[in-house]
Structure formats: structure tokens, C-alpha cells
Image (cartoon, rainbow, N blue to C red; front, side):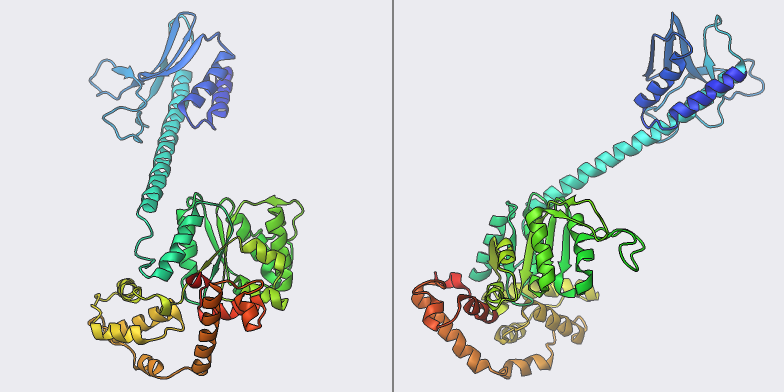
Length: 465
């Protein structure tokens, strides 16, 4: 019996990590084959079968019978019957299991039952694990198909692009999405740079990977490296665990750096090095880590103007400005405000849990009369306030909106004059800014300074080419 217990122990040790019927058979065959000259061991629909020198071994299930039954009925063990649930154990835990062998082989009955229980238990475990693996693969496939279906649906209602200016911006976004080039999104605050960044990622070949967003203006100077590159445990006071930075989380995906113009000079140097070497070093780490990210940067400032002023590195600027997209302010998106307001009202009604009211023509006229210096973000805030004031029954615009629309902002006449001057120069040069005969030369400005003013005023060079 000691020998038998050793065999049971060996079987348990060999099969404890088996997660599939094939692995289980290989483990059992290895153990049994080391003791007897097995020619084949295989898993059939009827159960576990091992053959040696003309003697067939078969696991059989001994079913429970009444006390009056003179004999016990037996039948082959089934691993998964078509009448059972796929994950239902094929053998009842209360049913004794025996190993039926040729009478020429002498094994104690106790050992036979114990061996049967061991193999049956492992078979049941393998069946469950195998089924879980099947369900996992199916879920992965369905998830992949769902992502593909969502891609085929197009941009959807989140991006309204009926105006010429917005259609041009989205056309460029769609064009660059299929490539891995770095993208620089330019535009005033609230023009939808984050939404466009998500759309570029959604349309790209990296859409099944992560899109990691980082607001550069919200990162304290001392934590820049930790946030973007990560840190090892114990790298500094308070680092009680390892932290994976944004670049690692975005590996093989997309990294969106918002407000990139707010980076300090030191942070610019570190970011440039990573973009050049495509490697990061965690704070406190020694080995470099390769990273493969598609970078989308955004700013409401003129990086070209900052380069002229010496506040932004020129080499970093050219790393970021591979493909620039200028997003128009809401005041220049003629034809977009009505559909955009309707879409925002639908989303906000769901958020507030109120009925979606229609937008009366009078309300729409007042919305179109406003200059929207805060762009889409300001429009969303006004509509949310209007829904709350109307209690979900109507849109009731706040009175302060009318006052802001009637009141000219400080310096508006001066801004209008500057806008007209720049637009006239661009009209004369057909959109040319740099070099001899360019708009910058006509106005006596540095090209970077002119571009900075154009961004602040929402003037797009493409409108004059």
C-alpha cells in the first residue's frame, strides 16, 4: 500500500497544474508510463483509456443503487454529455469511481477507488478550466468585433461638422488617423481638442489599445517625471509602491498631451529625449524601457510664437508639429450651432434625468447672436443652466447671457481692428506668412508673433490660400 500511496502522490503532483485534457493525459501518461510499459494513453468520448500489452484500462462510474439491488450497474465515465450544461461536472462527487482492469493485474480495491477519485477530480477541474478558456476567447472575439462595428459607425453625434471650417479640420483628422505621425491640435480653449484627439485614436490602427490623456498644465513640476515615466518603489519619499507612467500605459496606443504649451523648460528637455530615443527611465530605475506611442499634443497657445520668444524649445516644437490641425472657434462655425445645441441638450437631459425639451427658434436666435468666447464648453454650461431653470419642461436661457451678448467685451473694438488688419494682410499674400512678401513682413511682425495673434483671434491661414 505504501507503493500505492506514492503513486497517488506522484499523480497529484504531476496533474495539479494541468489546465487542459491534453496536458492532463501527458501528465498521467508520464507517471503511469514510468511504472508500466504503456503503448498508448488517450482521452476518448467514453472516458480515459490506457492500453498496455493488450490489456485495456477504463475508468468506470459505479452508480448508486438501492439496497435491494443485487449488483451495481456501471457505465463509462463521460467528461461532457450533450444533455448536461458545459460546465456541469460529468461525475457526481458522491459517486464512487473504480479503475476496471484485467484480472491479471493485481491492485487493491482501495487503491483503485482512490486512483479513480484523483483522476476524476483532475478531469473535472480541467473541464471547468477549459470551458472558462473557451468563454474567455469568445468574449475577446466579441469585444474585437464590437470595436470594429463601432468604428464602422463613423464619427457619430459627438462631433458636429456641418460648417466649412469644422469639416476641413475633421477631414485632416480623418486623413492623419491612419498614420502614426505626431499630431498637434491648435485652437482656443473649449474648441473640442480632446474630442478630436479621441476621434483620431478611434479611427487609427491603435484603437484597440489604450488612449492615455495627460493635462500637462495640471502636473506639479516635481512630479512630471513620475507622472509621465513612472517610478520605482522607494525612488523618493512617499513612493511606497511602483508607479507605471503615462508613456508605459500608452505603449502601442496613443498618448494625448493636453496643454503642452504649459511645460516647463526642464520638462521640455525630458520629453524631447523620450521622443528622440523612444525609451523612458522610471524614476529610481536603471534599465531603459522601450515605448511605442502615437503622440497627440494640444495647446491653446501659439508654440511658434513661444519659440520666437524663447519660452519653448524649437527642436521639441518640430517634433510635435508634424501634422497640425487648427480647430475653429464656435463663432466661426456657421451652421454648426443649431445641431450642436440639439445634441448637447440630449446629452444633458440624460445627465440631469429630465425630459428633452425642444429648442424654440427664439432661443436658437439668442444663442446664435452670442459670440461664445468660451466656445463649446461655454455653450454646454449655458444649456445645462437653461435645462435646470426650465425644470426639464423648456429651455430658459439665463439673463446674464443676454447681458453678455449686449455688452461689448473690453477692448473688443481694438481686437476687431487687429483682426481686420491681419486678415487684409493674409488676403494680400494669399495666406503666406513667412519669408519675403509674407504677411509677417507686411505687418512688421515676427512670424511667430503673427501666428500667436492669429490663434488668439481665431484666424485660420487656410481660409486665405
